[in-house]
Image 1 (cartoon, rainbow, N blue to C red):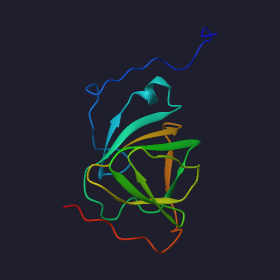
Image 2: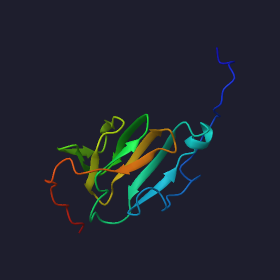
Image 3: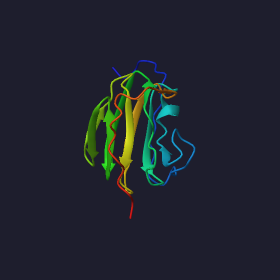
Length: 142
């Protein structure tokens, strides 16, 4: 046990090792790479995502082309439409989002931050028709 050849590598990223940067999937969020995509040769990505700009139009309706995705809210809150249901995700909550699930992140707090783990690392995002026309309004930042 523990002697099998592997295609993954040990990784240990400390808080000061990587910075939050723009350039991820959404321009109103910042992303902090946790080194997992490199350590797993692209099998998995793990990154911290945090609010950078106030919500205006959110993510729009979409789904991800992936095998696995979870979101662990570490700070603040976000409101998602998962298909036609409003879901408030608060600090400490964990969401498993099944592959292909149509959703829309439409509102979030200024301090929102979450850990997202997805497989594969180069997962896709595809625009989708609205699951409902009824999306609540955003909460303005003060």
